[in-house]
Length: 147
Image (cartoon, rainbow, N blue to C red; front, top):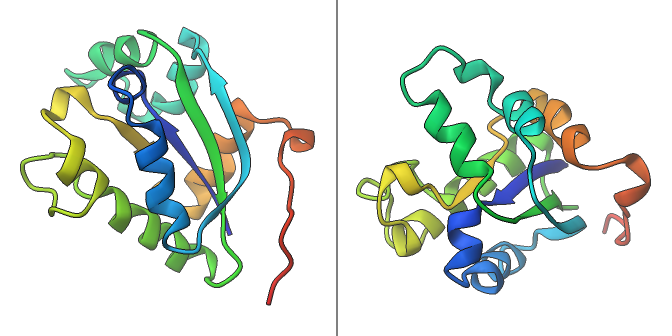
């Protein structure tokens, strides 16, 4: 299973990167791609194109352009694709920090829905579309064999 997470500029600026990455490692998820990247508008529009026309679209795009993000391709050797994506989504928590459970990334570190701290692919199809926006195949390294 591979999926994409983006630790957004707001979280990077708050110094939350290490804590967020550790949450995934503690669940047996590892990184097959990891980099610091300053998203450009075209990439943000590709990532969030499904929201075009929504009231929050421009704010969402502009938030992604405010500073560097951490891009990570997550991988696991213990779950099928859909189960793994569900686990990642459970680890990050509800989009609205006020509704996110404590112990989730958004529940513990999120302050307001408008300042979302992390993006994660919400399906296998989304992951397959999103990963190539930010990673070339040669940047993704499978370094653990299935058990």
